[in-house]
Length: 330
Image 1 (cartoon, helix red, strand yellow):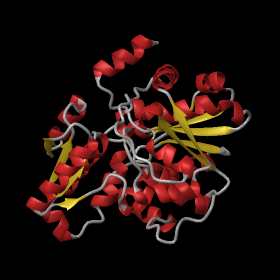
Image 2 (cartoon, one colour):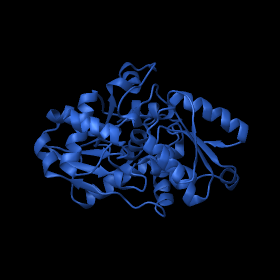
Image 3 (cartoon, one colour):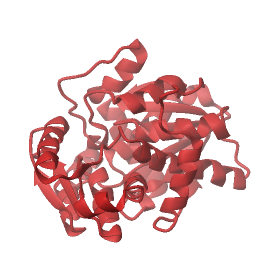
């Protein structure tokens, strides 16, 4: 793992500060071992249960971290963000608890159950555009009109620091349990989790490999990482909608270039197989993005025989129609 770029805004101290800020709002999530996963994959597997957070996704960490860092003036004006669901859910939840007005822009056809939950937390939901980037363009227009503070889902130092608290917990919990972790698999959408992880591992556990995993149908960041040049795609049509991004983000991409030990691509069928295995072995619900890390481990298990790997169950906000399709396919 090479040093982070000098301009990188997130370091271990920033993650520690985020840990202190979110502690009043969020409890640490479990890190558990399941015999079925060990047996199927032929190695020791630990599952980090981010689905046990209030919004059933790690994104509430990012949201609380960034909203608690705002000035009184920014809090009073309110914030706006573009989201496919989980980041919007996290911001809506955090805004409710911090009494900060929240507006979330989502693309048309977004997960209806995520949309409903965002509104139930008290946020304003605006549907605009046919994909995440179009929703982001609408967000920028509305922010300028209303004077709202834009919160980027990945390209924000406090968001990444919040995501880094996940890996900070993994290290604390695994050490307390006497576990020696060799690798952690992170699903990559915007890359906040992987970038936050790298800031933590570089300082506290440089021997642990951070491995990114992306869907073949949303492979822009993987392809950019492999080629060393920025690549964008015209579409990102994967059932793992939480990682359906079409281009890298500078802040997280620079960190991943410096710190990822490997980057794995997985197919839609591999993601669905991982979802079914996660449900069967842990009896926890999982969405596509939440099982993508496990899909990457399933593809890489042969090289990790005798070692211990962590997968992040990053979210469980799957709609009923998609869940039925995945289970029927098995």
